[in-house]
Figure 1 (cartoon, rainbow, N blue to C red):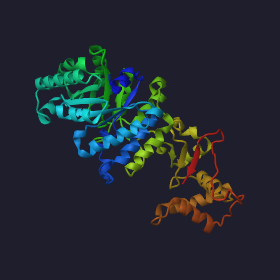
Figure 2: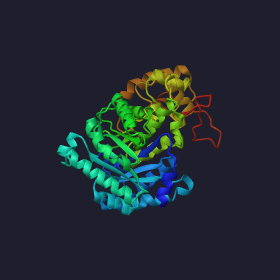
Figure 3: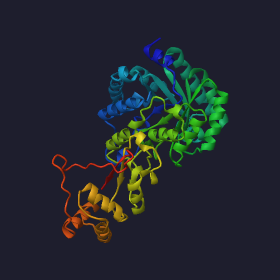
Figure 4: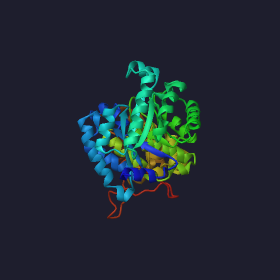
Length: 432
């Protein structure tokens, strides 16, 4: 038995195993094109690999080497990065996303992948407009190739997916799955075009579990209807053990399930056994890392983000300055979001202006002065000059018109912002 065989056959899967596909599905995101990047380079891939392994991911899906010479070359760099962390973090399995085609299989095996994630379109749309094969041919090809690989390479991890599974009639799907069930470790259930709903997912998972009790299930849910996270959560609740994710949920079209959003919601639902082995406090840093590679910010739709602790409305800002829990109900600090951000702008009330000028900038002023400054600020902030921020405007009003004096800061602390607004040891607030 090879090293890979020993590692996988001796490995006890956790209640939830993330199969992260940032370096496969994620590379299909239009965001790379939107920001004129087009692809992750080798260094990007090494850093993403290290971040995922450090986070606790044990399975990563990558393109098959046959996709391009660059992907083939980069895989070796990824593999070396993985190998460099084995002593510290244990083994992470690298899986090739392969067509049900001998050329893909041969290239992946030659490259040294730990497993093969077979796929072939099974829906009517895929059969008619994609590969053009009838169901009988799909069955014959899938059975022949998976049985051959299992016989000749018994150590490989094998998954088989009927692509577009949720638009594939049940009778057609199981006609294929029945033939390959003896040879695979997992069945994929890809919602390739994002048409599934939580109820349909629940029913499909139950039916597959009943028919194939000895084959693990893997979900891949797209965001076309905005249901990727909901469908993943329902799949996990229904007993699905493997879920495909990407960092920030990037992927083809609207993307797929966000890794950190999934784990965050499982934490909120007290599904603590599902979180085994994942470094939750690294969630926000890993999101920031990938956003930086996309030349963008962590998107506002991502729950594990600073945006989820950002406040602009005056009423909200006042309440948050008193107690963050008023408008921050979720334990984001456990997922690495340890600060809140209060944004100065047209909606800011006198409370936050008083706080910004006194606590952040060190001016001496009372509430009455803060109210006066706020009235002037609110009138002028709608007409900011080019390159002028709301904070710049506020400072100009305070210094030039009100001539506020600053608090004398002891030597050694000048130029530093020392604040902890929540006196019960809560998160730091930043106002800008």
